[in-house]
Every structure is written in C-alpha cells, then in structure tokens.
Amino acid sequence: MCGLSGEFRFDGRPADVAAVTRMSGTMCDRGPDGEGLWSQGPITFGHRRLKIIDLSERGAQPIVDADLGLTAVFNGCLYNYRELREELHGYGYRFFSTSDTEVLVKAFHRWGSGCVERFAGMFAFAVAERDTGRLTLGRDRLGIKPLYLSGDRDRLRFASTLPALLAGGGVDTGIDRTALHHYMTFHSVVPGERTILAGVRKLPPATVRTVEPDGTVTDHRYWHPSYTRSALPDMAGAGPREWREAVLERLRTAVRRRMVADVPVGVLLSGGLDSSLIVALLAEEGQAGLSTFSIGFSSAGGERGDEFGYSDLIAAEFGTDHHRIPIDDTRLLPALERSVGAMSEPMVSHDCVAFHLLSEEVSRHVKVVQSGQGADEVFAGYSWYPPLAGVPRERAAEVYAGEFFDRPHDTLAGILTPEYMLRKDVSGEFVRRHLAAPGADTALDAALRLDTEVMLVDDPVKRVDNMTMAFGLEARTPFLDHELVELAAACPPELKLASGGKGVLKDAARALLPAEIIDRPKGYFPVPAVRHLHGPFLDMVGDALTAEAARSRGLFEPTYVEKLLAAPDEHRTTLGANALWQLGLLELWLQAQGV
Image (cartoon, rainbow, N blue to C red; front, side):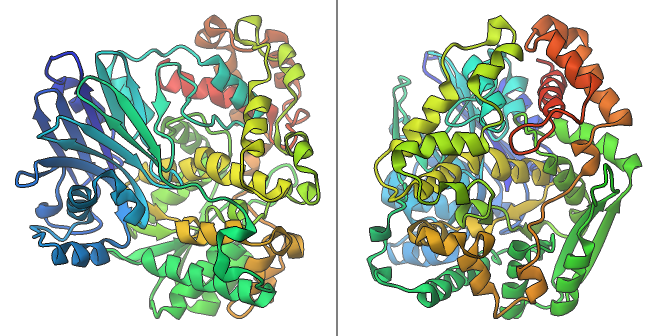
C-alpha cells in the first residue's frame, strides 16, 4: 500500500517535477516508509512507500527496469505475486528484488496490459514505456485502490488521492452539478468517473487506460461478472449444500491469499458475521497469536455505541490477542475533524470516524489487517434487497430507488439553490441504465451488480482505504476477492436472501462460529454522537453551513438549512441517515480542502 502520483505531458514540454513533488508530499501518511521520484522528458512519477513486501530498498519505487525499458509506480498488493514470479522465471525473466512491484513490471512486459487479468489482488499502477513513450494506467476489479485524474489537452496528472491533485495546482475546483445530484440522491455516492469537483475524475474499476504521447486515450474494461446462473457451468444444478461448500472454500482461498506479507497481519473484529468468519478461517490456517481489534463509543440518543460483547466472544473462542478500544466523547470531535481531512471525497457515513480512530490505534500494533468489508453487497445482506425479490426487471429501478435513494429528485428543488439544481433526474437515469444492462437474470441480480460495481466502490471500499491509509495501515478485504465475487454473483438470489440476508454465507459459517454470532441482529460501526447531532458536533456542522465560504458558494437553500439546524434529529433520509450531517459534511470537506 502506498501513494503514487505523476504527470504526462503532450505538448512537448518536460513534466513538472515540482508539481509532482508537491503531490507526493501530501501522501506521507499513505507511505511513511520511503519516497521516490523519477523523471524522463514528458513523464514524472512520484511515490510514497509503505513497506509490506520486500522490506529492503530493492523494493523501493518508482521501479526502473532499464533492460525492459519500463518504469512503474504501484499501490496495492498482488497476492499471487509468488506464483506469477515462478511463471515468469520459466520465461527467462530474472529478478533483482522480492517485491510484487517488480513482478508487475515483468508481467506487463510479458503480457502487456492484459497482465491485469492474471493478477489476484488490489492495485492501481502507472507504467511508462521508454520505447513507445506510452503511459498505461490500471485499477483493480473492485476499485479497492483509488486513482484520481486531472488534466487538459496539454497534460494528464494522476494520484492516489484527490487532495494530491489539488496540491499540484491547476485544477478546476468548481462543483460538478451532476455529481452533486448523485451526492444528494444516490445515498451520497458519486458513481463512475465523476467527483464532486468538476476538474477531477477517477479511473473506473476493472479498467486499463492506455495514453499515447499525443494524449489519445483508449480504455479497456477487463472484468464484468454477468450475474447469471449460466456464468458458472460447474455449479449448474447445485443445491444449497454445494453452494455452501463452494462459498466456504472460495472464502478460505481469499483469506489465505491475504496472509501474504513480510509483516504481521491482524483483523478488524467488529463481532459481526463477516469479520468473525475471517478470524475463524485464519485460526483454521494455524495462525497463532492473531491480533484482533474492536472499537466502541459512548451511547447517545438511546443508541448503544459498542458491540464488545460479540467481539469478546470471538476473541475468546479463537484465542486471539484482542484489543478493545473504547472511545470517549472527548476524542471524538477532534477525530471527526481529522477524518474529514483524510477523505479523498466527501463520505457521509459515520463509519468514517470509527475507522479513523480504529486505524490510529491499530497502526501502533500492526501494518496490515483483514476486514470484513463488502460481504453485505456481495451476499445480499442489506435491507433494500428483499423488496427486490420477485420484482419484474422493468420495475427494478423504481423499487431500488424507493428503498435506497436518499430522497426523490423533485424534493431537491427545496434543498439546492437554482444555480445547482438540475432539471433532469440524472441519478435515476444512471440507475435505470445500469439495471437495464444485459446480463443479470433477475431484478435482485441487477441491483447486486449495481451495488458491487458502483456503490461498494464509491462508499465502503473508499471509506476503508482513506481511513486506514491515513495511518499507513493496509486493509485487505477477502470478501472482495474477485473469484469469490464471481461465485456469489452466480449464486441463486434466494440462497443469498435466506435467513434474513447472507443466508448462504451464514450456512457456511455454522461449522465454524457460535450461533450467537451468526443469528445476531445485523450490526454496524455505531457512532451515536454523529447520528444524533448535539452539542459541539452540532456546533461544528452549524459553523460550516453558515460560514462565509458556504454562503458565497450557495449550494443549499438557506431556509432549508435553518430548518435542519433547528431540529437536527427530526430530518432523516430514506435509510435513516441524518440529513443535516449530509449537508454539513459536504461543506466541511470543501472547506477542509480549501475549495
């Protein structure tokens, strides 16, 4: 895990080394163990390193292979790098390090941009070819590793974080009105290539982008599960037992893959099904002395702020070296401000501050953790999935929006000022197009495809990456192993919806976990003080929404803001989120970034 950055010029001028140096300098937290810079004519790469594999300086980046004429920067981990290394040895390649980055370079030379299809892992990378002058950018299948872009006809810049691009300068920081519509409607998710800023875009997941010296761009999407029963012929006619066994075996492989490291690996243990199952499988692999970590907060609004009872049960069951991390309210407000500063994009979920505080504590003990993120999207664990069962495909978008969207398009006219209000329901159109795309046997299959390819990438996955990397902590997510996702995509929806959601996963867990964990009510990272805004938390939001920067920007109707501030707990989105926090977080983020 690291932070990469770079510039590629198309106008015959040399790349701006000073700008890339500034960009790289903003990502010290992502890569506290080293830094590197490489420049040649129109291309400059910057890199901040977090040492996980090959702790020697031979694994430093940017990595230059003069014999092959390739230079690369890489963020992530190739879990199958040892197997690929052996295969490449067979083709005559010789290695000067034991890093997975060098494996990426050799694999790119051998197989071109198609090398990504051989990778099992999370990654974002840039490769410069000396002989052709070409630049190739790539991102992993589930978008676990970020890659932000900005530029014009003269240049392209890229970085692991959006604030890094701002540090480089020359970015259009106007508000993208389509992105704002998504933020206010699509549960604060800004999908696709857009960000809230008009001048910053994202490389989509599962995409390789080839950039020629003249600026010509070609994209190739290399992975797209079909969400059909026919996608896995080997499972044709399989019953619940066969699916249960197949899921457990794939998850075993996913967890085992994510043990690869030259430093210890811990687990973020919430006490829920997903993280508990990871602990059980690591114990099954014989990992002794496993460090596990749980966080809890003070209660507020009649809502309990910790789930220590469940995490303690799993820690005792598997004999882990368990760390309880209670957080009192005096730590919460400063951490909330810091977590906003660590966001590459505005992220409303109060899980952000929980992950931020948890990561701060965990990073004192380990540099790598496994996390249960993604299981709910992959195995249908959320409340909006059951209403889609049996719904005709032509009604899928209507039902999905009614369950998931924060509010209907028409209500935005009373929230956004006329300057930022769009006539078209762009969020509704986006969802309708996605759900109507070929593949996906049922409405539920289509919704799971949408959430896995879009919502998962631009909400929980981004949240975990940003908050853990703020402390140089690498988070690995076995439920987002691409082969497990492919299996889950082909699994009959009724098996996923069983037992109140994630049925096939719960069945797979029964041989490993106590029933109290499997059959417990669904949990989450509760941060009651954010869900129930009061005291200094309310003051912070109110100050942001009434600041001169907010007034001059004029995103929101003043009368609507006043109404929310007068009754902060009374106004909720469809899924129960605090509407005032949604508005306040956006302004807090924009102001934190100096926009």
